[in-house]
Length: 212
Image (cartoon, rainbow, N blue to C red):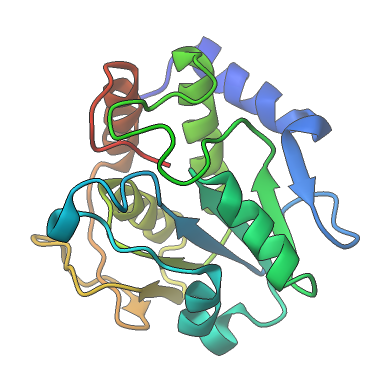
């Protein structure tokens, strides 16, 4: 599904404004080599044994190991605490993230998917995050449908290249085909444009399986 012209322009304009991005160190843009770290925490404590497990930033760093060394780290998260944890505990890392409104931990609840209270802006941010992540070839994450779609997009963008995926939990994406991925990941050939536009549409409808 092709994005409408106004939406593509809105994403471009969002990424073009320096105030919408944070870069530590001397970086002024996200450049390869880079790695994506996706930290989803909004629903980690709501459902007992069925809830998403909490992972500290340190666990993401340890999981990625040498694959993260010397790379810009694009941090995608729904938790403002994760941003502060990353910058505070790993100030020597070259962090990049979207400078936007976020909930803290599970304060938004399962059902609240728009911390900015602006569904249009939330959709633009999601698509901007996909555009940024496409520049990277390393992805560290826990299981979520958003992460699955993001991984597919990265693979499609870097066909013929080595893409590394590191998962922090033992859930497996069923029905995907292995496709030039190392590091214990899985990939496939899905229609990613349709997939992530569907995620954005679900966000606007308040779908509970919210992307970060």
